[in-house]
Length: 115
Image (cartoon, rainbow, N blue to C red):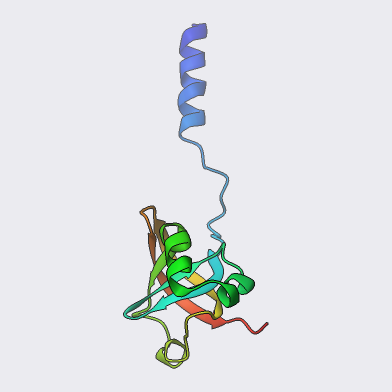
């Protein structure tokens, strides 16, 4: 009898809600633009100072694999046309970030950060 009750409680707990109320926080990424094209390459670790002191090749060699490519197809093109290498941007991510090297994701919104 105890086993049946234990099994019943175990099943009820397993079928419970996860505690989420349906509100999902927006995922954002803030970093510097390394490449601009049909998609953009963003790195969160590089600093503004490194952009000023290192060559493009040094930056690419050091930060490429830890960066994220963002598809910009569905982003406001008036913002996309203003993007330049070295700018700091804040990106609202649309969906999940694929764990590859470099990572890949879709951008829903891009804001150029004024420093």
